[in-house]
Image 1 (cartoon, rainbow, N blue to C red):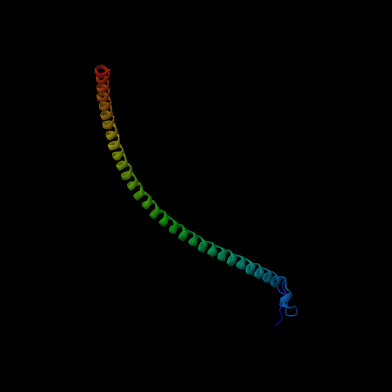
Image 2 (cartoon, rainbow, N blue to C red):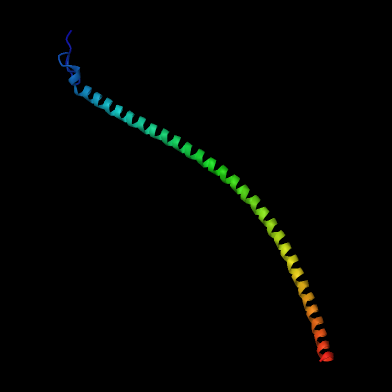
Length: 125
């Protein structure tokens, strides 16, 4: 039983490592291997980026929490400030009223002194 050679068959005498099909398969395997390595590196890059984003969002959540506490304290301080300003306004109004009543008293005393001075000048001089 003899075997006929075909275009794709090189027979037993030629080694399979030197055939063009084998070379193409090796080249394809190398390309696939390098593609797989590049995909693995890309996946690792994505994973590290996701990890970094996780850290950033954790820090952001911490800062938002701190800012919320700060905003509450500012609001409380504003309420206290408003109460202090209203109290100061009341005190200033009291002081203004006391100054106004003292002015009338001073004017009355000045008027009485002028009357006594005029009487003294007319009757004594």
